Image 1 (tube, rainbow, N blue to C red):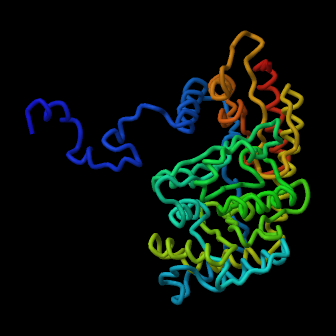
Image 2: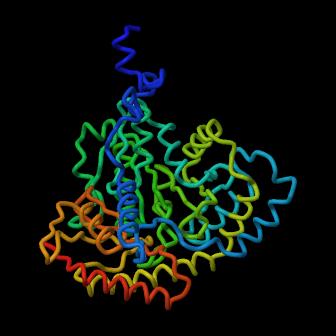
Image 3: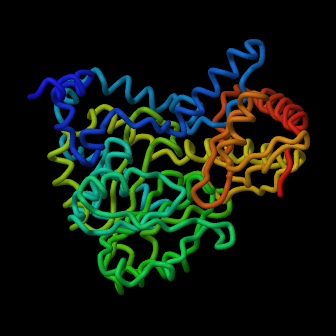
Length: 420
């Protein structure tokens, strides 16, 4: 190697040029773009430094604020000391799969064979990382709604595939416009990833919509992956599973999580269910990716799935908090309504303030609210400018919730926000 080349690259490790193109190749680690959530963290640190006596009102947290129910923790405590639970579980234990089958039958009237149509995952996130491995070759397409959870799209690109984005617009009631997909894209489409109740928009969908999805999947010959992470946090009717739709079992799978509806954040438990061939393909990829979740955790999760009172209590809590937040924000000039599901409230971002500040995008409004008023939200600029408020803030009593709402109203009134 020449002296010039050595000097030029002296700050880089010898393996800098060896990084895979999928994560940036030789430029990996040199990207100066700051991730959205890192910007929020920096703004929070600045707000705390500038106003050390002012409490942050954090509506940006996207995970449950409570521990798992005591009954779940008791099962875990009992099972963790049993020697038969010490080993690898690989593709899961029958006890958890059977509990998942009972849950699907009881909640949605969906009959599944636990041995062939259900497989556990270490949380739903790895499922979205692994399912593209089952289908995507270079040049293939995954259809994904935006805004949304990006993991399936990231891994589609890792395999040389492409992502075609379906924007969720207010004028379309936050449903994807399938007519906007060009025929040449449909010819290359392998996967459609949906998420209802939708994060972050809070939109739920209908059996009629799912019927259209099933028909389209059969016509265009692609596989449907429905993300049901928030399904037990449905507020506008009974929770609706994609697999309740006639023909859905022929075209795809649904992915469930124990996190949102069962306060099992951090336990890393979920399951993939649906067409047995797709579940089998997922299990094969998973078998080469992990050795299964700890058996004691699976048994605790099985007990949780058998206790419908747990998600009912969690649903009631977040419904109550959302109702309070909707009322508070509407009093402060926002135009929002109770979401159909999730613990997120997705509302149009302000365009500026009465005192003259202007916000070109939601990210600017978020930074202003954090730094100047100690109110934390998450911006979404993917399909219009929106703010996401989460009701997973820490509050031990309803009185504390009410006090938080009062302080939120006071600060937002002081902010003097305006909308175009």
